[in-house]
Length: 182
Image (cartoon, rainbow, N blue to C red; front, side, top):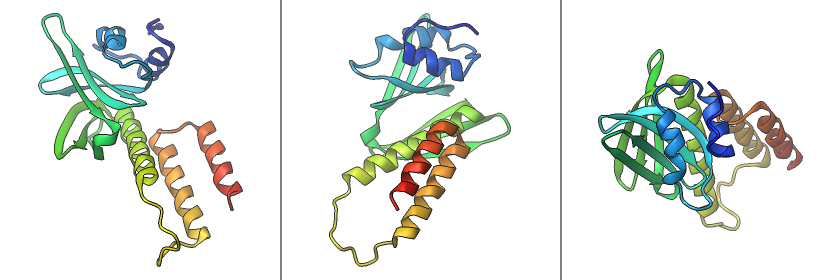
């Protein structure tokens, strides 16, 4: 499938899910629902609330967008409101469950490789946001040793690479940074 020529960030994300069967209209209309300064990180197709559409992970939120001839549907989940993510899959498709503000949203029929990568990336963003929001405590009673901390960070990094949430180049760069922090 050729380039969409929408926007560089959207084109790059769309190329990773090619062919995006039935999502072309949503991809072309996506800039109209994005906020100023918002950039698209990942895309996937899926169904939500009875309609097939596009799932977009941006730097600010997770968006489900359906742009039909007769109707449109837009549901968004600001990253700061997402408390957890669950991924369950069969052979080819799966369900991405998003828990936000006490509610659960199930986005179904997400292609397995895209859902795995999307859920892994979301988990990483949630963990990063929670870690930066957590208050710092001086001299915690049960602080992990430096080796345990490095080991857990490397294990998390390995999981992100396996899930496809980061590229091999990003993996190597972050691994080097973690090891350099010892």
